[in-house]
Length: 333
Ligand code: PEP
Ligand code: MN
Image 1 (cartoon, rainbow, N blue to C red):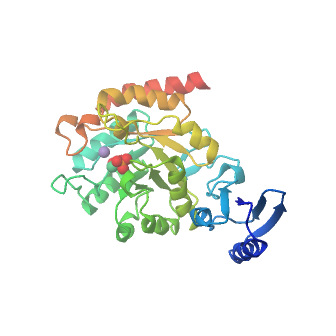
Image 2: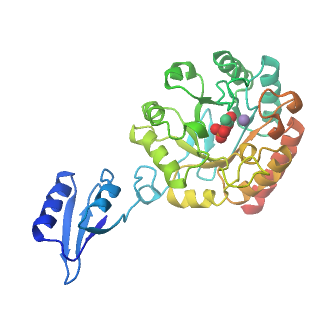
């Protein structure tokens, strides 16, 4: 980090600032020119409050040279992170199809969908048990019962399972869940992220509705700073002024994130578009731009789904899509 002081800054004020910066645990390289004085901060500057420095009367400009995220930064960890769960690899060239219903609704439903998506080549089963709904009157998920049914589907098929956590106190209920999902609405629930940093289980972190990639990476950093390095990032569309689609899928996030971080990046075209007929083209585009995987909502009876039926594919539609995704992957190889 570089701090440029205004020309008339007195030595006394400058030295006072330097002493304070050193007390924050960084080393200082001072460069005094005829017009400007530049203070170079060396070492771990992650804890330095840039806005506070910028607000000081004597400071003309502050430039961060490195990124504020360290553990997920590709610069310090060039090799792709590969996440392994129940014999399935994700990242580092290992493409992964995650599929399943928005929410677990019944034993028959989850078993039928699990068997269908497995037959089509999906290797991880998704299913929401605790649902973050905009309306308190909408279906909230089967909660613990939903997790039990998801476990049953895991036992029946051997597919590892992913489900969303909404409350940090629910963590013990997720014992049998292989990948814990943090939904878009909780991307910046820092208490939850910190708690997930203390466990040894992969976390699928979805990008918030109105969050930048830097904020997504800082949230991943929260989890990793606690010691849990198994984080999967998920682009699921962001809020823009567009209203014809549920969200706007930011596909450039995929190569940008892959440049910035070694963590796997998956794309969820279901929540990104909100419309089943848009899902295949966006899924193929995500595969074509190098995503490490896809997460797709599939329901055996979308018209009667308790949640997100409009964006859910039928098993037959998913089967067709999975085949085309494989063709795109082969074309890329
Ligand atoms: C989900 O995947 O079920 C979900 C609620 O997605 P998001 O958090 O991206 O809205
Ligand atoms: Mn959904």
